Amino acid sequence: MSGNQLWGVKLGNYSKEETYLLIDEALNLQASSVLTIATLNPEILLLAKDNSRYAEILNNFSLRVTDGFGLKLAGIIKRLKTGCRLTGVDLAEYILKKGLENNLKIGIIYREEGLSSRSDLERFFKNKKVELFAWSGAKSEIMSKNLQEKEILLVGLGAPEQEEFIFEIKQQLPNLKLAIGVGGTFDFWTGRKKRAPRWMQKLGLEWLGRLFLLPKGERSFRWQRVRKIWRSTGVFLFKVLFN
Image (cartoon, rainbow, N blue to C red; front, side, top):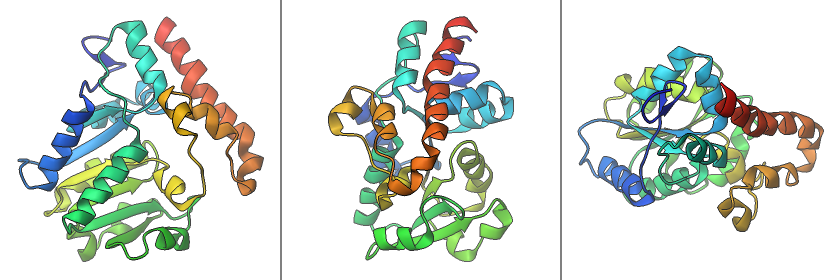
C-alpha cells in the first residue's frame, strides 16, 4: 500500500459537489473524454486485491467514488483520503434524472439471469426514454447499432463484470459521454430489494438493514447474504488491519 491507494487501487477524494459537477460537465459536452465511474466498496476492493488486472481496470476509470461505510472506516484506520461517501444507487438516480432532462440516449445493461427480470425493468422505466440490453456473459452478443448510439450507460452486472464491460466497450461507442457500474441498483428500483431507512443509510448501517428487508422470495438466501456482508465487513477490515 502506498500513497492514497489500497491494495493497488487508487482511491477517490472528491466531495459530493465535485462529483456532481464532473457528471454535469460530462453530460453537457464540457468533458474532453468519456467519464467512467467506479463505485468502490469493500467487495470490489477484495476482488481487486486478488486480481491485479481488475485493479488496473479500476485505476483506468476517470472517477472512483467511495460507496460503502467499510471503505470509509478503512480510510480512517489507514489515514487514507476517501472523499465523500456516495452510493451507487444515489449516483445512478442523479445520472438518470439528468440524462432524461437533457434528452440523452440512455442504455440500461442488465444481467439476463438477474433478480430483476426484463418485465420488472420495463415496468419501472415505463414512459422513460431508455433502452434495455440483456447481458448473458458475451460482449459480442450485446453489441448493436442501437447500443453504439447511446450517450449514457448504466451497467448493473455486479463486480467485476460491470467494470470490465465498461473498460472493454467504451472505445467502441462513439457517442458515449458517461458510463457507470451500478451494482444492484436495478433491484432497488424494481422493488425486488428494499433499501434500509434513511437514518440507517446516514449511519453507514444500510448493510445491516438489508438483512431484515429481504423480499419473501429471497429469504432462502438469507445466509448467502450474511456471508456476503461478513466478507464486506469482518473479512475486509481484518485484511486492512493485518495484511
